[in-house]
Length: 403
Image 1 (cartoon, rainbow, N blue to C red):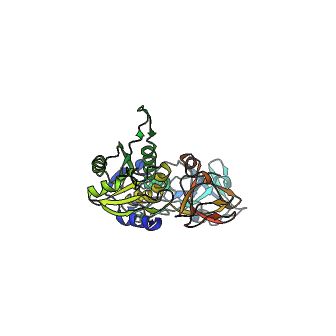
Image 2 (image 1 turned 180 degrees about the vertical axis):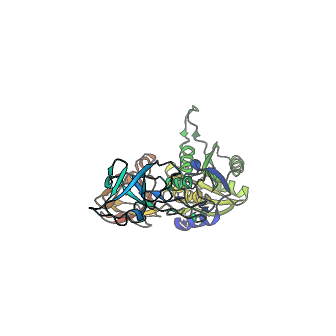
Image 3 (image 1 turned 90 degrees about the vertical axis):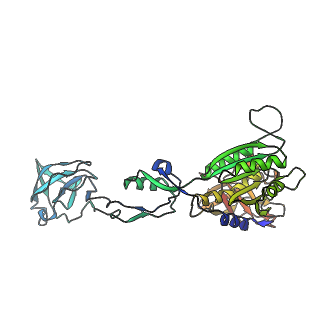
């Protein structure tokens, strides 16, 4: 079997970012930027007030003393959205709101709390140096400056930055379409009647694909016949990647290998040192990736997280397609049968400053219920049979956790 880390590298070497498309910025959240973003003008475009107060000129306060204040006549107000059409002459001031542009002739702001007024006369008892409580023009960025690099993941702050620059649309890498096919005579669709095993894989894998950023395309169920599997695979290859679940083992009704051969696909590996998910296969057909996962739902789930999620992220242009691995401390002893690396559903929690981990149902094997309760997959190295309390384990997050 191919070591899982090597299998993942092989997958990532076989895929590349898809083409670009232009999106409105609200739809660009969690997409990867496919262009450099350049500031079209300086921001802020002119000096602005950092506080509510009074815009004035330093020269008019240079000699101010507590016992001999400078006296400035307040000639009006500059609201936050005003263009500051008024211009200050010597000995004048303007009341100004936070964020409002400084009027011509002003170079400082006196905070409202520090102001003394007598009618329309502002009394200033100390010099107000230039730049006091002023947001300087171009402080955020200058005209023509590169603000965002190509390959950046667009989160809420990046979306806000794009909007502040006046960008309503932006070029991003295309989301891959992921075709998903379930294989097995025993499978039945939800609400379809009859008896059998509900086709949970199509729904779980579609949800995982969507969560990773892909556009899932369900191909439904196909029966255990090589020609049927091959025909559905051909249909699925109209998408950007194909994911099958079921039929990947070596049993009499595990026919995926024959279907791949009939398809003349370039098989890269057949079996991964990964529990659950060791019968996972990976192939390419006309440059498009085909992932053939086991039919057992937990095995399909884990194989997706380890191998397919990084592939989808890489196809979207993500600069870091790996899910970050964390270190956590075992809070109870974990006993494991010897074998390939084990990805064990687990709960995470903080105990003081320490990230702790508790496995879920490790004695009863894998179950979808365990995955539903889990925050992460604990990665137990090959050959390990016991993880003692207090030992550190690497974990891969599968959802966020709050405690």
